Image (cartoon, rainbow, N blue to C red; front, side, top):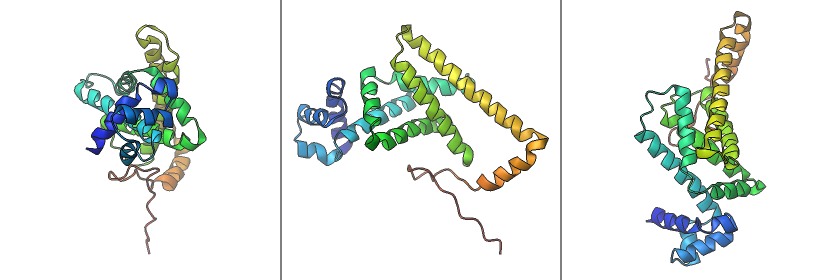
Length: 230
């Protein structure tokens, strides 16, 4: 029931966001449009606009995941699957102005950390949805890199006026190819004989880093204590 009420408030808010942004004014108007008192609305969204802004982003993530599950991506290269997932995420947005207003909202210092966490969450859902099983430092590097790719693609997409957003998809493909080239470069570095001592040192320093437990969604995960060999 709580989620249903939150969905009602969010649905009502979408008509107001292009004019008033993700703001308290939008939240109050949405509560009224949904037939709720402000107290009832705050019972499910205690942070007001912050809660509905985050709910909007997570709704897009859920729609992306649903499309990833229904689409047949098996014939695509791995890089193409990642690009398809990012494209699905952007195509889940009903109106660019909602995202533009969101970027303005999350650019504010008091909201910046949550905005970064939401983008990280999108990257995590993409990798997890594609079957990523990494549990070490790669878990973090994959999500950090994809967060950057996603963020830059959103910025390009907001200003793209090409037919069918063809320019955005080409931009996205280039960014993904840049990432794949970097991964190949890292692989060659690890295989270089002259660098094996440095690689071994890095492995000993960062080999204990693990991804967050599946039951946790907070960041940045955990670094297990060193084993006592004595």
